[in-house]
Length: 85
Image 1 (tube, rainbow, N blue to C red):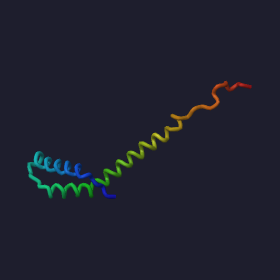
Image 2: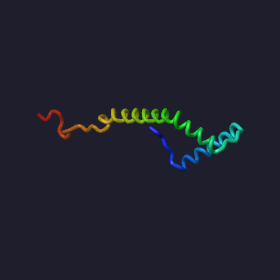
Image 3: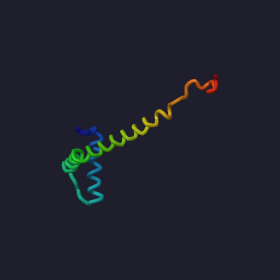
Image 4: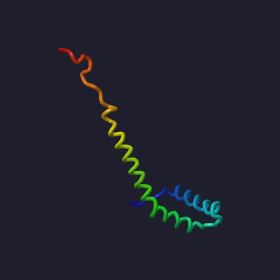
């Protein structure tokens, strides 16, 4: 599965990478270098992040589905007492 960014989001990410290198590492990084690093992260790390997010969402939904019966159950024919003879 290829993870893709919208053009505007990609531009913002590249700007962020360049700023990080400039401010934190005191290194100037060009557009090509930032793009190559960004593409590397997408190829190498993004699938792990994606898979973990899916696993978290599945666990959350399974937990909610397990509680669905208790949350949504409504007793039937409760108007009359049990001893209606």
